[in-house]
Image 1 (cartoon, rainbow, N blue to C red):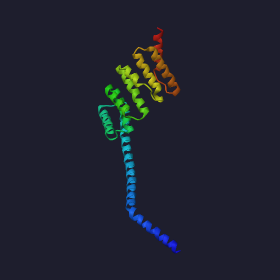
Image 2: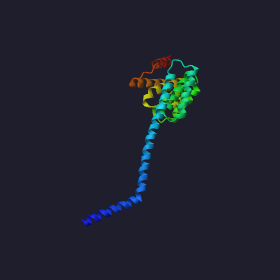
Image 3: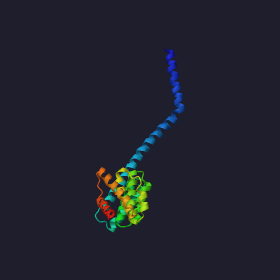
Image 4: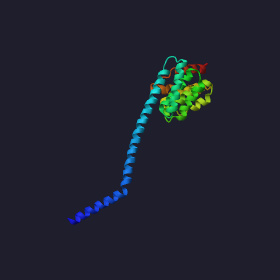
Length: 218
């Protein structure tokens, strides 16, 4: 029994010595860990509030742009919302989608330079392959409209699968503009096949193919 008591006393002394040597650092570690958890929760709350704010601005932007007509006041308000998203939520998905809407507004206003700038911003900043592909597709359409068909074709390489049919159709438009009718027919046929496979019809495609076939036979 005496041996057991001595052993327990020695263990207790050892614990006391260890605590004296390491207690403060242990407490500090616990405090730091607690602070880390608090900071993480605070960041989560902040991140959630930031995301909510970005979502609200984006919803307001969509509501504005969805109107049948957008007057000068509405356009200014839309630009203001886009600017706020860029300033406060520059890396967010909402900002990238806002740039797509900005491009849409600019195309309607026949301001192709501003539209191209907005789409290029999405291509440069987005990590999402679909958004990059969508921006490239829309930018290619603008380049066809501006007569830069080589640039349009370069933008249409390796589109994401959901956009492959539309990309092939725009490639056909660029090839028609370059007077490459046989290649354009192949592009339109590819677009038609892909659109049928995906169940997403591309309106006007059959008419374009019929026109080219008529030209080829004449």
